[in-house]
Image: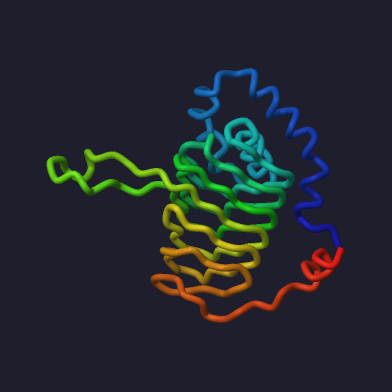
Length: 201
């Protein structure tokens, strides 16, 4: 059986070449032209969003998929590892730095933020106080389901599932299923056999 990422890998060298060609143009042009591919359907859309991400993001690994309608702000703080993905209509602001691990996917209409609003200066309105940047890290082999909100400064460990419509307000350790508002541990996941084999080597 040919998985989607295997099919994607066949055209990836061509897409990387397109990204290099796009790199000859001013970065501002590439950022402002993302809307041209943001809603493009099908594999062509996935391919072109990969090209734009390769040009704009801090780093993009192999076979990364970005779904239709996904909005990314501050691309230069975004790191997407091999085989990771952002599904349809996600919102990502990487101004404080965001890392999405290998084989990890973010469900549609989820939000991932790397900043918080300041509110400690009583002489200014809250919207005039600026931002506090807080890096966010999502580990390997993570599934974040639809409609999840991951708040700034949080770390999600490896092999984690976050249930739909949850709000992540604290770090989530590895090998667990979490859900709720705020997200809490629902059950433990066993250590996968492939991880056990890697640890023995």
